[in-house]
Image (cartoon, rainbow over all chains, first blue to last red; front, side, top):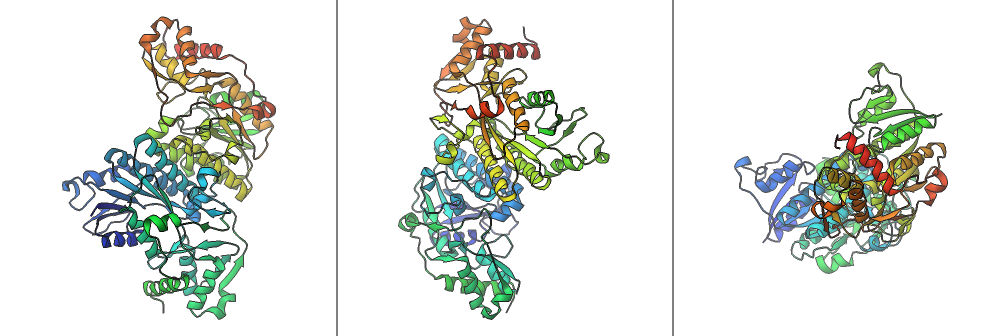
Length: 319
Length: 319
């Protein structure tokens, strides 16, 4: 049993990770932006150092300034601004939360000495056309194609430099497209969330052709992430992605079929050219995560989308 | 004659650049953080989009909200947080000013269509051991070694992505160690400024051995930078550095000799190992800047340091 802090623990990935960590017997503490009544919960904007520091001095937790100082064995730093277009439209938040926020956590790690898991993205591979193995960036020059992607590569370098300068022990994870129940819609969310919400609500949507991806079911992703705490290898970096390689057109077709709206495809779906500065294909090699973290795919894309649609119908009260 | 805006125009490089641009007959407008009474001056924190936007809508200039909207042919975006240790100690400012600030200027460029010159640093070459030609980062994977260096590489990618997505026309400049009269002391300034100030004030200082650099005299640097406006090649990137390759020990020795304090070297100078995460040697190839911008070295390191010391004695009233 370890004491584990999860920043961004109320997010789409965070909630599942907390559940997986608790299932493994760990004591889990959660941090996120909003107020929340949980006993092991503290509100914290990771971009504000004072709020980060209070997680250790005790002030942020229930009990406030009378709470005991806390320590954690492992910190999963999931709190981040997410998404390519979000990064272009809200770049102020991206730089503050991702670059300053990660530096704030690193400063605490350098002081407190906990192990940490930092989250990066498949976006750091830029438009690399080959199979994305973790060592690509050790040999091939990659230029990230948007501020969100750049900020995630910044985070990786911040982590590496801290390890060199201060001996901090960290693992980096590059998340590939992850989907599943529990991801509320906004126009900046994952492509499956976007298509599912719009198809469900009869809102026409655009499918950019020529992109290929894997999609990781959120519960599978979270189980692999939770395993890091129990098999912690400092300096390691893992791709965490799915096994089924598919096009974006496939996703749209499955969603329409599952909703029984195939006959309305012409009305609901517009096909367009690939977007500028977007990775054409993301073919990932996750063999390290399979070996060290037991990453596995327990559900097909079709079944995972069905689960996602079921949750979404219930969440948005659409029949 | 072009209308030229210089952000950071009151800084150590900016003041010389403004003088060089005016000598070429351009109409120059200056922006910096502080209040200032100049006719062509506006206060602006480039990290705040509203303040940036007002440079074009007119509100920031003398006359305030009644000032006419302005347009500029060229913008030199010099405003930045500078320095490796500054970036580690004041990373909040580095990310806000450098990453958000540059994005703010790019957003205006995408809207207004001016040409722009963006400033990067030799720090983007990380610890690359060979001769630093501008195309190193197109072929060799470099990891920048501190947040300041990372932020400058972020700026370069932001500029490249904007050119791809919006067709903005920009030139990037990678400044190598620049020195000369007019650089006020702080512990985060250039190595020549640091050593000069401390030797002048009999403050003991540490020389990290094993580092080799070129040093560019500020007036030579500014003349080359000013030439960009008259020979603007969109997409180009220039190293701007000096020709005399020297060790950091050389700099300390010259300063002590010029001050007549050679006999006090043991008391004033401590030699130490190279610092962690610092580039060991910066051997630059500036042939492109020589060819396109007439970069030239008009003064030896010894004479340049003598000029710097003379200014510093006067500025700090030390005889």
